Length: 309
Ligand code: HSE
Image 1 (spheres, rainbow, N blue to C red):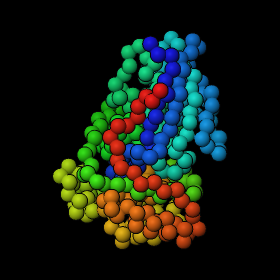
Image 2: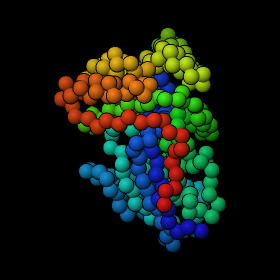
Image 3: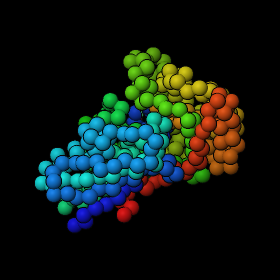
Image 4: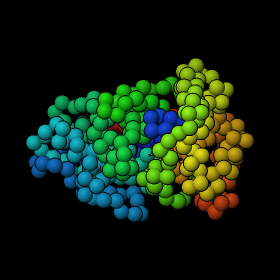
């Protein structure tokens, strides 16, 4: 049996615009790493967190990775414990699924040290307990793709079922992260609890259309369906210049452009040749609003979280 393991879990675009809380995809370029070591002392301890300018809680129950691994340890009734170190590669409060990635990397590394490792589907519910610490609610749109990889739809919370949706070949995701912090809790708090029936119909049609178009490589239908009529209109005011950023992406050939997770990162799907012009337009639009940005252009990988050492 191994005594220690390091796992990597990729960043994710939650919601993918039209699938609020149930759809997400991985971003190959960035992610978090968690090192876990078996200890004779029961329970879970966080020995350090690196990679951020600000400090995150070291108390196990207040940390997404700590809470995720603790729930695994308790459910498995282990008579030993784990010490862990977290290396953040995903900017905090960026809308790129940083809390989910840490939770996922923690349970994947811990799992590698179990006598009988669990399946990824079993690990999902423990990682979800970690995500709850960060956002105040259990949602899976970042956790599931970070764990499984690719574009992932999740149905159900108590007994979640996941499906990896095929992504048409040659699709790229442009991600522009403006240098500002946006709290997921706050971005959820401002949302209306009710939806107009006509918006529900429109949103359902768009989600169904988007997913069927992914299965059939129908880029025109992806473009037509790629519109969030419920959440984006309520959140866009939280991101200075969002409308100009989106207009810059769409006028340069994007298939769709929306807020990544709870924001402030904005993402656009496109065919590979359009990625450079779209990137330039999005970054320029944020700059015109006084915001410097990080930029990534990523394919949508299918590997998901894994043990790397
Ligand atoms: N689906 C969540 C939201 C993602 O949009 O609030 C947050 O990480």
